[in-house]
Image 1 (cartoon, rainbow, N blue to C red):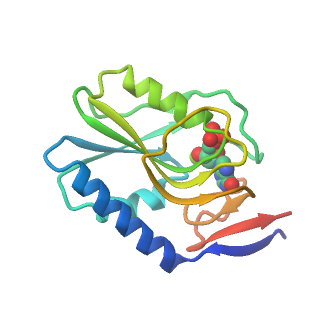
Image 2: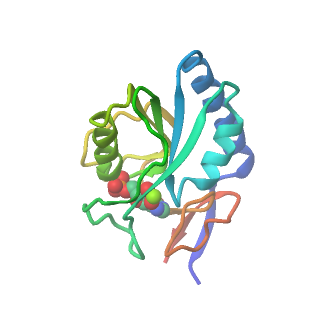
Image 3: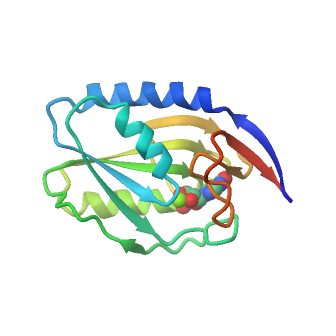
Amino acid sequence: MADKKILINARTIERRVMEIGREIGRDYAGRQLVLLGILNGAFIFMADLARAIDIELEIDFIRVASYGNATSSSGTIRMSKEPELDLAGKDVVLVEDIVDTGTTIAWLRDYFASHDAASVRICALIDKKERRQSEVEVHYRGFTVEGGFLVGYGLDYAEKYRNLPDICTLSP
Ligand code: IMP
Ligand code: MG
C-alpha cells in the first residue's frame, strides 16, 4: 500500500476553484466560452469549475492517450476522443488536471488553435514545474507545485485514488 499525505486539502481547493471561476467569468463575459475538459483527470475539477462560472458557456470533453500505469509521460500524443461541439469561432479554455512536462497541453493548444477556434487558453488545476519541457503559458492555474507524484481530486495513479477529496502526494 502506497503512502498518501495531504498536500492541498478539499477546503483550499474549493476556495481556489471559486476564485478561478470568477476570473474566467469576468474574462469571458460577452464571448462564446467553451470549457473543454481533458478526460479522465479533469472530470472533478471541471464539475466544480463550471459551477463557479456564472456566464453562459458550453461544455465538452476530449480524451488523449495518457500516462497509462506509469508515472512519466511517453511524449506521444493521440486524441482518442474528439470534441462533439463545433469549435469554430469559439473561445476555448482547455481544462486540465495537471501540466507536467507540458507535452500534452502544448500539443492540444496548437491543435485547437489551428482548427478555427477564436482563442485557446489553458486552465490547469496544478502547474508542476520540475519536469517542464514544452513552453506553455498556463493562463489559469489552481496551484503551483515543484514536483512529486500527486493523486486525488481526479488525479490518479494507475486509475486509482481519483475519488480522494484532497490532493495528496503518493510515495511508493
Ligand atoms: P505532460 O504531458 O507531461 O504535461 O503530462 C500531463 C498528464 O500527465 C496529466 O494530464 C496527468 O494525467 C498526468 N500526470 C502528470 N503528473 C501527474 C501526477 O503527479 N499525478 C497524476 N497524473 C499526473
Ligand atoms: Mg491527464
